[in-house]
Image (cartoon, rainbow, N blue to C red):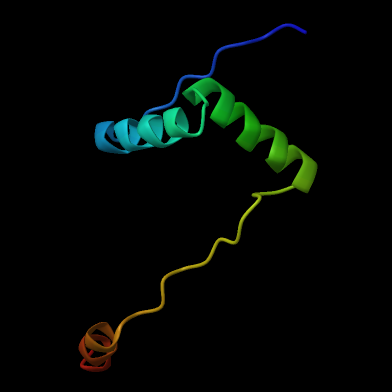
Length: 66
């Protein structure tokens, strides 16, 4: 199977944290991203729930003033 490169930009702290996590799991970044992509294709979508954060009480009060 032929492979190709994907270039992505992420926050350097996020990258470092992810690398540490994946290393602890015995994975490298490439393997972890490949697992995510295969899971998304199999799931036919993002393989986890996506939702907006609900406004907290302070934000609700601030918004009600407008």
